[in-house]
Image 1: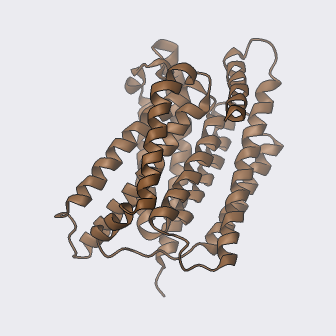
Image 2: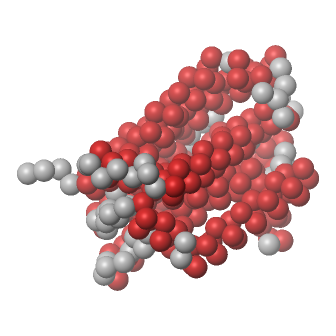
Length: 327
């Protein structure tokens, strides 16, 4: 009995989460070392490019992203993307041991919620439908609904970069991660298109002659570079245990929305399966929120000014709440 495409995608997605979760910690440690001897990435410095530990984290992330890339070829985004919650668990556990960012009982509860939600999504995930050519994917990408999504996404990114980053980038984590997540949703759509093109080419149906294939590749490269730049800034400015869950929630939500619009992942599923997937996703979100709140409470209880940098991050969380209320 052959292994289904969804199973292949599931295994690859889990391996991807392991590598990516580890990469967060390695890069954070590299950025900390760089901050002690040079200009911080959060203030525009690029000295971290000379730090071996940062490169170890980058290589680990690349391996994870490659596994994630291949996972999108075999399974729908509604299955692959939520499994990124496992990277939160990995980074939280490693941060506890390597960065001395304590994982308390509520944090463990958050991890368990992420696992339960992931299991529910895996059980009810739809089977992948592979388009027959890049032209079919292009037709999906140029439908009015998805074009509107792209236009809105790029408009918000421009506003965040041109106005909010200079004023709130160092104090409001939503700015950096908002840019990462919005561009990330477009990255996934492009990468999925490229992956399908590669799969079809390996099967003997070459897609290299289509200009749309190279367009999707160009979009993916631009989006990935933008994501990495602002993710580095977020990791250097804020606590790793805060960056990971917030980034996951924003990125996953936007990616599922983008995929549902472009690839119609839920087409053909019955109502109960869709509701189960949504409930599983909400369970995962609850787990990430619990992890987030746990970290915020921990920083609030640290004494004196010994933890000045962490207390500064705590103040930034108050700014996030104010910003979200204003919206």
